[in-house]
Length: 125
Image (tube, rainbow, N blue to C red; front, side):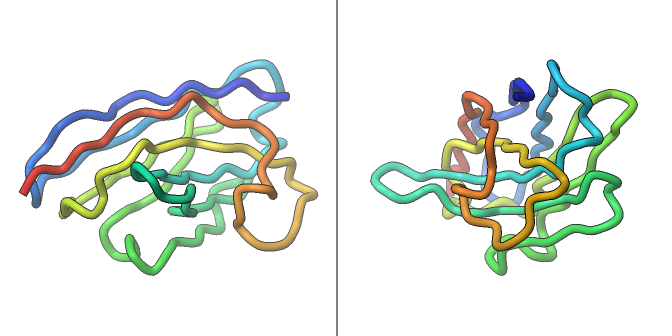
């Protein structure tokens, strides 16, 4: 499995921006599609964004569409989540996840095979 390490979380004010990074190691990064998820206290882990192995295809949850952008740099084995116009409802632990390119189907957490440890994002009002 690929190993994943997130970074870039922090405490920001509403309207600010943050960029999360997820560094991968252990397997060929371009063999994996990547996703970002988030989990607020007492809630389930929710899908945020997904990017194909090449970066040519992306998909977003409605709650972040137009504000967040997922991207990847296969030369650096890294996937990013640019978060703009943050709101308090974006407060959560953010996780990156990987799944092999041949996996199909929806973007539920069960469809991803490797997970990072998470990074906290807190947005104050």
